[in-house]
Amino acid sequence: MCGIVAYIGPKEAYPIIIKGLQRLEYRGYDSAGVAILNGTFNLYKRKGKVSDLVDFINAKKTNGTSGIGHTRWATHGKPDDTNAHPHTSGDDNLVLVHNGIIENYAVLKRALENEGHVFKSETDTEVLVHLIQEIQTRENLPLEDAVRISLTKVIGAYAIVVMDKRDPEKLVGARKQSPLVIGIGEDEFFMASDATPIVEHTKQVVYLNDGEIAVVNRNGEMEIKTIESNKIQRPYVHQLELQIEQLEKGGYDYFMMKEIHEQPKTIGDAMRGRINADEGWIRLGGVDEYSAKMSKASRFIIAGCGTSWHAGLIGEYLLEDLARMPVEVEYASELRYRNPIINEDDVVVALSQSGETADTLAAIELAQKRNALVYGIVNVVGSSIARITDAGSYIHAGPEIGVASTKAFTGQVTLLTMMALSLAHKRGTISESYYHRLLVELENIPGKLAKVLEKAKQIEYIAREIKDANNALYLGRGYNFPVALEGALKLKEISYIHAEGYPAAEMKHGPIALIDENMPVIVICTNKSAYDKIASNVQEVKARKGMVIAIVAEGDEEISKMADYSIEIPDTEEPLTPLLSVVPLQLLSYYIAVMRGCNVDQPRNLAKSVTVE
Ligand code: F6R
Image (cartoon, rainbow, N blue to C red; front, side, top):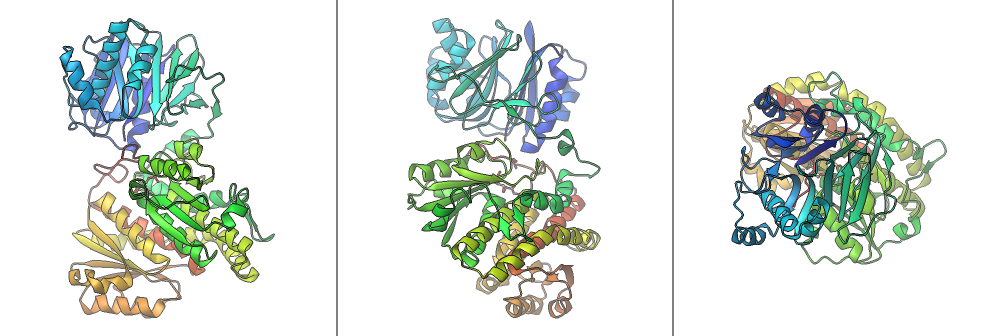
């Protein structure tokens, strides 16, 4: 989704803003722009990549020590130079960048047109900057007051930064349901959609809350007020733990490959200090604190979107199987608009890598209104979901820059596994010996995952064989059914090959009609409990000349003989299988996408954090 960067201070703003926009590229966008203030605004906007904007600007005038930049992911109006941000007021005194959606923009636009305003773009954002101009001029207000009053008239979600060329010493930023972070440097300030453009300049940040407006100035002063004009006395200053190397590719061609290879470490980090197999304990913040409530919950509702929803499905298998807890897994976007039955003795688990997904945030708010305990499993530290949930745990995977989620997924599954094991132990639903076996095996997963990664060359070879397919089918049973869904999603989103994930037994109820010699069928066959049944499914595919790529446990003979290709992964306890079996599928999609010439880290139309519904 859109990315915002702004700077005010003693340094040249343009290089800081361009570098910041490059840091935000991972969020997904289709155009970019900057406005640098130097008496007047030097404003440049371009459809395409930040590099296209830089080429376009080339030697044009960019000097100035304050400015704003934006990467736009189109919602209202096509991606083109005119619709790109920043947008200016009708009198050219104000510039504004925006992430979010102004839902009542059409009504506001009509009213402004009646006042004589003329619009250049098709965007909701331009309406907002004209509204601020109208109110500022009519009531002769300082910028921050005009922004505040304008925002009371707006319905929708926003993070904005505004500048006024007649008042060049300040930046004004505001947020509602879209993130905005303020970086505090030495007599300088940064504003950005997340901390990635800020971290190389300062580690001190303030996360703006919903309904807050911040004014920062060149004298190093910052004031934050609510939209009702109440001053926030001492805004909480966070210390960023993010390291700059985490934002670099570190020798890999793409972030996605780096992140796939980081998984032995990130799974280890997710467990660090939280599990000790020798001593037989799991300590998960929040789960311990609310253990009485969680152990007695009438049910768990897991909510998320996309890959996080797939992790949630694995959570369902884990909590049911180990903790004997009833579980429902919901797409957050559906949950929020149904009239769901959620009670105060339910526990809602919200899963999100970014912690900013608009639908997941809305589902949390709904659950909180119904007095359920909401537990967040989130990657981005300080994100909105991390801050509004009642309790929760970070997955500690570090920044995930590739749009296709990989290490966040295995991090989420690791936390759900620990949560299920902890509750199972407290509720006495598994034997001590099985509990200990699972703890020991969980600690072994990073080492086993490193062995899976050694299969990369073989997987690259298989990728070459199937890279020209138009369709692919992914099959799995039990714990591996959500893995099949996740494998199919990975392929779709980065290689643009149509793919479907199915429970293997469901194949006979429809998808089998699609199978012929052109259809690669990826079957995840590591389940011990349903091995014979999966073997039959593989036979059914082979009987129809489908090409089978099987993910099997080390030493497998039966299915490996039937399959065209088989990828062996280390054996493990069945509930832990997804942590290993998903990785060959991540690698397969990666290689296919690279071979098809796709931009793996920034697939078309996709955004990393979906901050609009
Ligand atoms: C797929 C992917 C998306 C996200 C989804 C939810 O690879 O990344 O499907 O999983 O947009 O995002 P978060 O987890 O940030 O809430």
